[in-house]
Length: 224
Image (cartoon, helix red, strand yellow):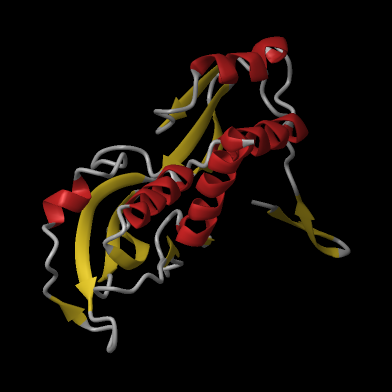
Protein backbone atom coordinates (compact mmCIF):
# COMPACT_ATOMS: atom_id res chain seq x y z
CA UNK A 1 0.00 0.00 0.00
CA UNK A 2 1.30 3.52 -0.80
CA UNK A 3 2.12 5.90 2.06
CA UNK A 4 0.74 9.47 1.86
CA UNK A 5 3.30 12.18 2.76
CA UNK A 6 2.41 15.88 3.17
CA UNK A 7 4.81 18.23 1.38
CA UNK A 8 4.89 21.93 0.40
CA UNK A 9 3.68 21.00 -3.02
CA UNK A 10 0.85 18.80 -1.77
CA UNK A 11 0.42 15.16 -0.88
CA UNK A 12 2.96 12.75 -2.28
CA UNK A 13 2.36 9.01 -2.51
CA UNK A 14 5.38 6.89 -1.63
CA UNK A 15 5.46 3.28 -2.82
CA UNK A 16 7.73 0.85 -1.00
CA UNK A 17 9.10 -1.79 -3.35
CA UNK A 18 10.67 -4.97 -2.03
CA UNK A 19 12.65 -7.39 -4.22
CA UNK A 20 11.54 -11.00 -4.50
CA UNK A 21 13.10 -13.39 -2.04
CA UNK A 22 15.63 -16.06 -2.89
CA UNK A 23 14.05 -19.41 -3.69
CA UNK A 24 14.64 -21.96 -0.92
CA UNK A 25 11.87 -24.50 -1.24
CA UNK A 26 8.56 -25.54 -2.75
CA UNK A 27 5.28 -26.65 -1.22
CA UNK A 28 2.82 -28.11 -3.71
CA UNK A 29 -0.62 -29.04 -2.40
CA UNK A 30 -3.31 -31.07 -4.15
CA UNK A 31 -1.06 -32.49 -6.88
CA UNK A 32 -1.72 -36.16 -6.23
CA UNK A 33 -1.11 -37.28 -9.82
CA UNK A 34 1.73 -34.94 -10.74
CA UNK A 35 5.14 -36.68 -10.35
CA UNK A 36 7.40 -35.01 -7.79
CA UNK A 37 10.29 -35.38 -10.25
CA UNK A 38 8.45 -33.08 -12.65
CA UNK A 39 8.48 -30.32 -10.02
CA UNK A 40 12.05 -31.05 -8.93
CA UNK A 41 13.29 -30.73 -12.50
CA UNK A 42 11.38 -27.47 -12.96
CA UNK A 43 13.15 -25.75 -10.03
CA UNK A 44 16.46 -27.63 -9.83
CA UNK A 45 18.57 -24.76 -11.20
CA UNK A 46 16.82 -22.02 -9.23
CA UNK A 47 17.63 -22.84 -5.61
CA UNK A 48 19.27 -19.90 -3.86
CA UNK A 49 18.40 -17.52 -6.69
CA UNK A 50 15.86 -14.69 -6.69
CA UNK A 51 12.39 -15.99 -7.52
CA UNK A 52 11.77 -15.17 -11.16
CA UNK A 53 8.10 -14.43 -11.85
CA UNK A 54 8.53 -15.15 -15.56
CA UNK A 55 10.00 -18.57 -14.80
CA UNK A 56 7.20 -19.23 -12.31
CA UNK A 57 4.63 -18.44 -14.99
CA UNK A 58 6.34 -20.90 -17.35
CA UNK A 59 6.29 -23.61 -14.68
CA UNK A 60 2.58 -23.07 -14.06
CA UNK A 61 1.88 -23.37 -17.79
CA UNK A 62 3.95 -26.55 -18.01
CA UNK A 63 2.07 -28.08 -15.06
CA UNK A 64 -1.28 -27.27 -16.66
CA UNK A 65 0.01 -28.70 -19.93
CA UNK A 66 1.06 -31.93 -18.21
CA UNK A 67 -2.56 -32.55 -17.20
CA UNK A 68 -3.99 -31.60 -20.59
CA UNK A 69 -1.62 -33.88 -22.51
CA UNK A 70 -2.84 -36.86 -20.47
CA UNK A 71 -6.53 -36.09 -20.72
CA UNK A 72 -6.65 -35.25 -17.02
CA UNK A 73 -8.53 -32.34 -15.51
CA UNK A 74 -6.16 -30.35 -13.33
CA UNK A 75 -4.59 -26.92 -13.05
CA UNK A 76 -2.61 -24.62 -10.76
CA UNK A 77 -5.31 -22.60 -9.02
CA UNK A 78 -3.15 -20.48 -6.69
CA UNK A 79 0.48 -19.49 -6.15
CA UNK A 80 2.16 -17.39 -3.44
CA UNK A 81 5.59 -16.67 -2.00
CA UNK A 82 5.85 -17.39 1.73
CA UNK A 83 8.42 -16.09 4.18
CA UNK A 84 11.84 -17.65 3.92
CA UNK A 85 11.67 -17.93 0.15
CA UNK A 86 9.20 -20.83 0.14
CA UNK A 87 6.99 -21.01 -2.94
CA UNK A 88 3.52 -22.46 -2.42
CA UNK A 89 1.48 -23.87 -5.30
CA UNK A 90 -2.12 -25.04 -4.96
CA UNK A 91 -3.21 -27.54 -7.60
CA UNK A 92 -6.84 -28.49 -8.24
CA UNK A 93 -7.47 -31.99 -9.60
CA UNK A 94 -10.96 -33.20 -10.52
CA UNK A 95 -11.99 -36.43 -8.80
CA UNK A 96 -14.94 -38.67 -9.67
CA UNK A 97 -17.35 -38.52 -6.73
CA UNK A 98 -20.12 -40.74 -8.06
CA UNK A 99 -21.41 -42.32 -11.28
CA UNK A 100 -25.16 -42.20 -11.80
CA UNK A 101 -27.03 -44.16 -14.48
CA UNK A 102 -30.13 -42.52 -15.98
CA UNK A 103 -32.32 -44.02 -18.71
CA UNK A 104 -34.11 -41.65 -21.07
CA UNK A 105 -37.17 -42.22 -23.24
CA UNK A 106 -36.10 -42.33 -26.89
CA UNK A 107 -39.03 -40.15 -27.99
CA UNK A 108 -39.48 -37.61 -25.19
CA UNK A 109 -35.99 -37.54 -23.70
CA UNK A 110 -37.54 -37.76 -20.24
CA UNK A 111 -36.21 -40.10 -17.51
CA UNK A 112 -37.69 -43.59 -17.68
CA UNK A 113 -37.16 -47.08 -16.29
CA UNK A 114 -34.65 -49.06 -18.29
CA UNK A 115 -34.65 -52.78 -19.01
CA UNK A 116 -30.90 -53.04 -18.51
CA UNK A 117 -29.59 -53.36 -14.97
CA UNK A 118 -27.40 -50.39 -13.96
CA UNK A 119 -24.88 -52.86 -12.53
CA UNK A 120 -24.40 -54.31 -16.01
CA UNK A 121 -23.34 -50.89 -17.29
CA UNK A 122 -21.18 -49.97 -14.30
CA UNK A 123 -19.22 -53.22 -14.58
CA UNK A 124 -18.09 -52.23 -18.07
CA UNK A 125 -16.69 -48.86 -16.99
CA UNK A 126 -12.99 -48.40 -16.28
CA UNK A 127 -13.79 -45.06 -14.63
CA UNK A 128 -14.48 -45.62 -10.93
CA UNK A 129 -15.44 -43.50 -7.93
CA UNK A 130 -12.43 -41.90 -6.27
CA UNK A 131 -10.34 -41.85 -9.45
CA UNK A 132 -9.11 -38.76 -11.23
CA UNK A 133 -11.55 -37.45 -13.83
CA UNK A 134 -9.95 -38.43 -17.13
CA UNK A 135 -11.83 -37.25 -20.21
CA UNK A 136 -9.99 -39.65 -22.51
CA UNK A 137 -10.85 -42.58 -20.25
CA UNK A 138 -14.50 -41.52 -20.02
CA UNK A 139 -14.66 -41.27 -23.81
CA UNK A 140 -13.39 -44.85 -24.08
CA UNK A 141 -16.05 -45.95 -21.59
CA UNK A 142 -18.74 -44.34 -23.76
CA UNK A 143 -17.46 -46.27 -26.78
CA UNK A 144 -17.38 -49.50 -24.75
CA UNK A 145 -21.06 -49.14 -23.82
CA UNK A 146 -21.97 -48.38 -27.43
CA UNK A 147 -20.22 -51.50 -28.73
CA UNK A 148 -22.37 -53.64 -26.41
CA UNK A 149 -25.10 -53.08 -29.02
CA UNK A 150 -27.92 -52.54 -26.53
CA UNK A 151 -27.87 -48.73 -26.44
CA UNK A 152 -28.98 -46.28 -29.09
CA UNK A 153 -27.38 -43.27 -27.45
CA UNK A 154 -24.92 -42.75 -24.60
CA UNK A 155 -24.00 -39.38 -23.10
CA UNK A 156 -21.97 -38.61 -19.98
CA UNK A 157 -22.52 -35.27 -18.25
CA UNK A 158 -20.00 -34.15 -15.58
CA UNK A 159 -21.56 -32.14 -12.76
CA UNK A 160 -19.62 -30.34 -9.99
CA UNK A 161 -20.17 -31.25 -6.35
CA UNK A 162 -20.51 -27.92 -4.54
CA UNK A 163 -17.29 -25.90 -4.43
CA UNK A 164 -15.09 -28.99 -4.21
CA UNK A 165 -12.92 -30.47 -6.94
CA UNK A 166 -15.17 -33.52 -7.15
CA UNK A 167 -17.56 -34.25 -10.01
CA UNK A 168 -20.54 -36.54 -10.39
CA UNK A 169 -20.80 -38.30 -13.74
CA UNK A 170 -24.36 -38.71 -15.01
CA UNK A 171 -24.61 -41.31 -17.77
CA UNK A 172 -27.72 -40.82 -19.90
CA UNK A 173 -28.72 -43.97 -21.75
CA UNK A 174 -31.26 -44.47 -24.51
CA UNK A 175 -31.88 -48.17 -24.99
CA UNK A 176 -31.81 -49.54 -28.49
CA UNK A 177 -35.13 -50.24 -30.19
CA UNK A 178 -35.56 -53.89 -31.15
CA UNK A 179 -34.61 -54.49 -34.77
CA UNK A 180 -32.97 -51.11 -35.22
CA UNK A 181 -29.42 -49.88 -35.01
CA UNK A 182 -28.62 -46.20 -34.76
CA UNK A 183 -26.23 -45.07 -32.10
CA UNK A 184 -24.13 -42.15 -31.01
CA UNK A 185 -22.47 -40.89 -27.89
CA UNK A 186 -20.20 -38.40 -26.24
CA UNK A 187 -19.26 -36.35 -23.22
CA UNK A 188 -21.65 -33.49 -22.81
CA UNK A 189 -20.76 -30.00 -21.59
CA UNK A 190 -22.78 -29.89 -18.39
CA UNK A 191 -20.64 -27.75 -16.09
CA UNK A 192 -21.78 -24.24 -15.26
CA UNK A 193 -19.76 -23.53 -12.12
CA UNK A 194 -17.08 -24.91 -9.81
CA UNK A 195 -13.29 -24.51 -9.52
CA UNK A 196 -12.56 -26.58 -12.63
CA UNK A 197 -15.60 -25.64 -14.71
CA UNK A 198 -13.57 -24.22 -17.60
CA UNK A 199 -11.69 -27.48 -18.05
CA UNK A 200 -14.40 -30.03 -17.31
CA UNK A 201 -16.91 -28.43 -19.64
CA UNK A 202 -15.03 -29.13 -22.86
CA UNK A 203 -17.11 -31.46 -25.01
CA UNK A 204 -15.86 -34.46 -26.96
CA UNK A 205 -18.05 -36.66 -29.12
CA UNK A 206 -17.68 -40.12 -30.59
CA UNK A 207 -20.09 -42.39 -32.42
CA UNK A 208 -20.42 -46.11 -32.78
CA UNK A 209 -20.10 -45.74 -36.57
CA UNK A 210 -16.43 -44.81 -36.16
CA UNK A 211 -15.84 -47.91 -34.05
CA UNK A 212 -17.54 -50.22 -36.57
CA UNK A 213 -15.53 -48.73 -39.44
CA UNK A 214 -12.31 -49.36 -37.54
CA UNK A 215 -13.26 -52.98 -36.85
CA UNK A 216 -14.27 -53.59 -40.47
CA UNK A 217 -11.02 -52.07 -41.74
CA UNK A 218 -8.95 -54.32 -39.46
CA UNK A 219 -10.83 -57.43 -40.64
CA UNK A 220 -10.39 -56.39 -44.27
CA UNK A 221 -6.65 -55.95 -43.69
CA UNK A 222 -6.40 -59.47 -42.29
CA UNK A 223 -8.28 -60.94 -45.28
CA UNK A 224 -6.02 -59.17 -47.75
